[in-house]
Length: 169
Image (tube, rainbow, N blue to C red; front, side, top):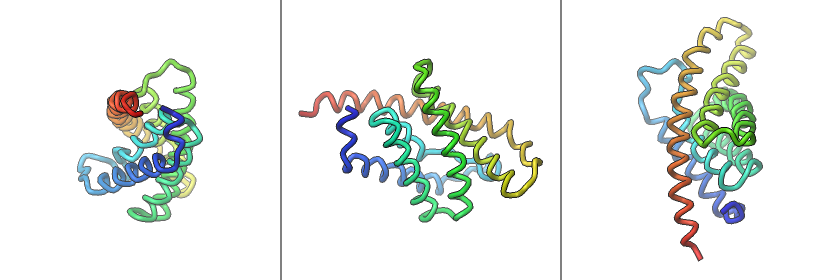
């Protein structure tokens, strides 16, 4: 299955999927969330790419997703915060997957938690205050919950795709 997704057309489809999810996320009201808190729907495509194609492809998809969705639906600061979060998140996901001790949901949860930590660190550096770290406990909880939900969706998608790819010529 991994060789199949190294083709540009499949990577293009995954990038398009991630951008659609990122756009849908901008439409969802989040009345209970702290400022900057999101579901991270676009990360589903990154998670799928990590499992289907590998780390390099997932890194590239993540980079392109952040840049394109930032320019299309966000701002320069949004891109900066997302890049910081994505860098830590991606390293955490690679490490968790690499241990072989975590399933798809666990890898995604690590990514969700470290994405929030990376964004908080970037915000603290930009604003030059440690006062933002009071956000940390709710952001950690948010990262665990959303990471689990994205991971569960990813696990089921991978399960469905594995059956589809087995039937391809």
